Image (cartoon, rainbow, N blue to C red; front, top):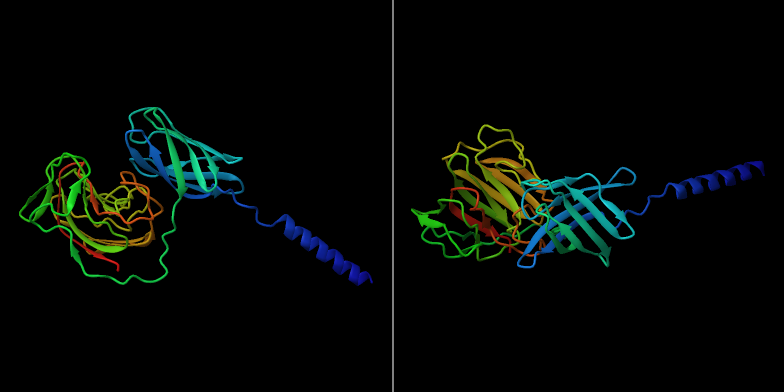
Length: 311
């Protein structure tokens, strides 16, 4: 009898321990969010990721309309209400960005006060996982640039500084960005780019994820420099050539998974892009998007732009 009582006591103790140490329910705010901000005269994208740090502290990162992902030291979440603040990045101001929202029925609604001091309403929806259940079947390659004119492309703004000369698409000065009329889901992209010393551009995949183009010769790899997925993914080496030479990218995007080969070297291999980068055309990550070239950061030239879309 004594042995049976001991076994019963051991069972009750273990059962109570298991109950006391069961995994707590994670706050619903945790995860990635695609944000649409209504500024009245235009709609701009943003992005938010919230993570659990340790037992109870929520941290995260945020992407505004421009710039790169910024860390959030603490996200406050209580009874469905969420708020945080982060200091300015590229804005020449001392005004913090302040995010206030309410999570209800799987969406966050609220206001964002930006670093200019402007307050605008927003709606946030959970970002899609973009997982693929099978390997892509590639279609036929498509020449996106015919080498003669800008047919198949349009600029982001009404003004257009882009010209075509000798089979090269040129932006001789800072001006509008340019994008393809066609949109794409998964693809392999071949593109060649050249820029003068100190210049800067970018190749946006689906119009939302920037692979950085910048004069970075002689520098250490960084997510903000040549070959990086801006603010998110750092290349494993600096494969850039000096300014004035043609740089060659071969980029594969499948769902969120990206591989970047620069000048024949694989610098990012099958890595997950967490979310949109600054300058994205929108935050609708589940939709196809264009190939989008940055033309507002200095002179740049592109040629031999070929895409192989998945069927």
